[in-house]
Image 1: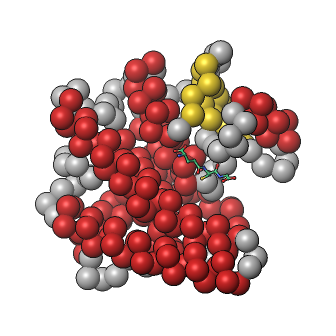
Image 2 (image 1 turned 180 degrees about the horizontal axis):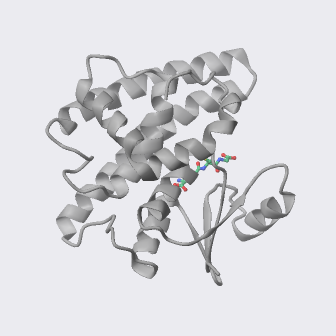
Length: 220
Ligand SMILES: N[C@@H](CCC(=O)N[C@@H](CS)C(=O)NCC(=O)O)C(=O)O
């Protein structure tokens, strides 16, 4: 029986970030989908984390929230063969920085556009998209300067930073397509999509694509 329970939704970018970490290490867990078909999961998740953001990891009596903290917790409490944070402190700091970059400057900017579209208000939709495009353009340009010659975000090892990067860039590209002038970034996104842990999360989320409020493209 797995002791770990993950509350989330397969189509949610932040849920996918944690799923990647779990799949990378083949960590056993039970997934509890937060959705209209399972109101008991919604009630339990809200009771445990009234702030109302997911995913939430439950390990016995312990509730763990915030995806970066969840992934660090998994490494400490349920380590597997693949370290997602390096041992060396400065290398770990670099990984944490890229994790913050993807969450704050890619994932959250993409979510502004999605939130605007979900509001149903045409002005909010337009403003959300405009802001996302401006901010994603800045993020893409900077990432292009960072990724040349690297396999993963911080070098040759797949880390927490790549767990954050995969769903961020996946949905960001649907929101504001990565221009051809950023070939290193486009190639990095393609490598992330080919990574089995993320490919599995993408496949599991496929049935929910019609829910993408900006219109999911045919690619990927
Ligand atoms: N900083 C949080 C962000 C989590 C987050 O924004 N989750 C989204 C789903 S992808 C959510 O719960 N949205 C529900 C809402 O905003 O009401 C983390 O890393 O866990």
